[in-house]
Length: 301
Figure 1 (cartoon, one colour):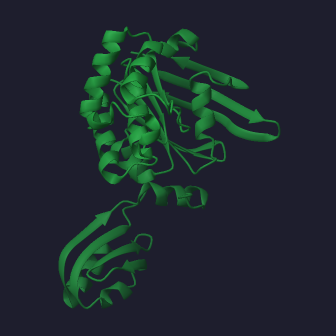
Figure 2: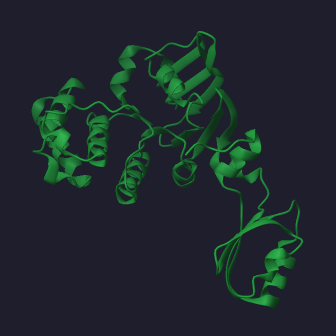
Figure 3: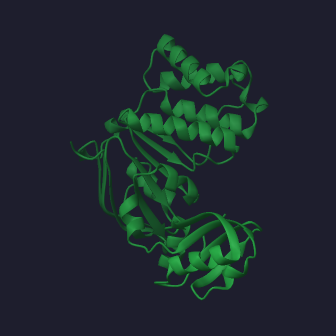
């Protein structure tokens, strides 16, 4: 089965600014792909080329195993970072209208809209106007509009922006269900903690250039397990151990960065001698730490 998306050496510049340079990636059916990087790194420009909003200056785009054609967009659902809802329309009217724009008849659109509103727990809002709703509620409505026509490729640009933790978790669970149902999902974000939980494959972009790419497990396996999470009670003197490069002590819980090739077991023995240890977990670095090591810059919040 061909990849749902294949970008081959695409580049895009606006006057003297290079937005994306020599980016290649593939997204397989039934997988979740994370396009990562700080704000302004080229993520949205890459997505716009992927779905034909703009054309690359060089390179090629393939959707569903064929060179890009506008007809393919019937099989794509796109949630842009800039939201676009009609403020004066009621929620259900708006969703039915958007479903009809995507080729559904009115009855089917109404049925799907009702099912999705129940699933995402917004039935109490369906007869309200968009302008009466919170930003998070509007985000869920746009999320539903993206999925009304049952797309095979779901592209989401910063999908969790404006959502509280409960609603962000609800959308995450929904995306995981869609992946299990065989959908290909790309989401672009600067929130790397979300990607670690959800994505099978990632591409990290910095200033328009891909700097790190591959399967999540494979990417992380390139880096030494050099972080320790420890729950303890008593003397924290073990944090001064020679194996410790840096640490954050929250009082009863500490996060430790080890020196290269340090002996974590010797640190554990020292900790046991000084304090009561409830948990000592040796961990790989987070994606954000990997990014910082790769390019030497922190992610914009």
